Length: 340
Ligand code: GCU
Image 1 (cartoon, rainbow, N blue to C red):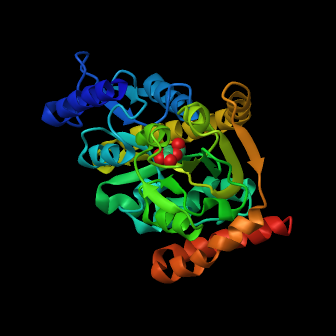
Image 2 (cartoon, rainbow, N blue to C red):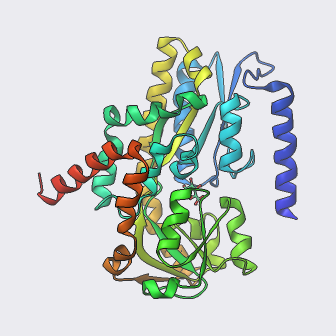
């Protein structure tokens, strides 16, 4: 029922957006309303990052713009909200790179399992804004552009029964994001991939439609998956960032001075999100363990890695667009290894 009401409310809102408010929504104050959609709850680091974005924009350009943030997929799942951003019905959306793969296949790189050797390498690659700009521009043809990234942690398997070795994945139905590369990955692990939207995962586990899913620790608490899946295994297969994506027409319509404000607001939102992220992981673990009874399992990561490493060659041969970035990340992995 709750879900039905949520969908109904979203439907009404989206219909209103499509019917007329489209993109250039004006408040009665005459301000241009900027709408941002995301999939997380009001306490999630991304919401806090977006509040920093809102604050910075409104402090500097508040006579002209009002930023409105829509959490909890109320404007629709990531795929839907990306489409709304594409058409300009809304202005920004936070979406995982897995959801961007169908718009620009360079984003498949982030779904490649065991791509980064460590969280340090991951962060340093993502924080290299000059390097990332090329990639950020890759969806221009689709009508939107990435303006910054948010940390979404390391993805691990969790299920109703414990996964201690890769063999435990056999015959299990595991939800993945709607990303061809993630489907291939979970199948290579020996499980059966079930792609679906984030908002459908809780019920699917609860009703036994799937056995489990894979995500960061916040999925257990912020999205309450820990109520229905009690075993979380640290096999560490992916670090998939979330992206703040803006409608290109909107971004191009800003004056150079305004653009700079939005750019700085995006940078600050990432800074806030990263700090909040680091705090939230420990808290989520503690809450999942103590309040929800989730067991955290340390596994032999190498055994899991072995299963899916052949995917690197396969993905590289099938998608030339990811080769440069792959090479770059391998070099960064090596540098960190050598302690340079
Ligand atoms: C994480 C991530 C989201 C993504 C979700 C998912 O929560 O931050 O962007 O959509 O996982 O698995 O769908």
